[in-house]
Image (cartoon, rainbow, N blue to C red; front, top):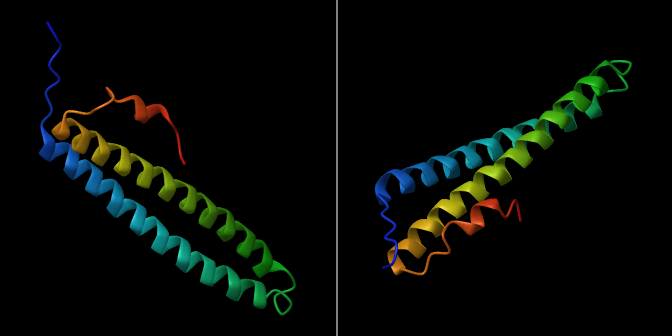
Length: 102
């Protein structure tokens, strides 16, 4: 006798959408930080390097936002794929959740 795997789709789809929304928010933040970094680097000469240090700090935050956005997108993709495969009956028992970021 086979094992039956039950899934309530709506909460999983809502969670996937939440990860997508967070990824979009993080990408917007990264774009704003990138613009700010460019301005601060342009002002570096006039500020005797103070703005350059701040630009480097913001650039680090921008990079982390980009990486976190990728993680959110991967989680969203995994959840959407899990629902789609479960509906089609072709799921791989969640094996893709441990694959990591592509």
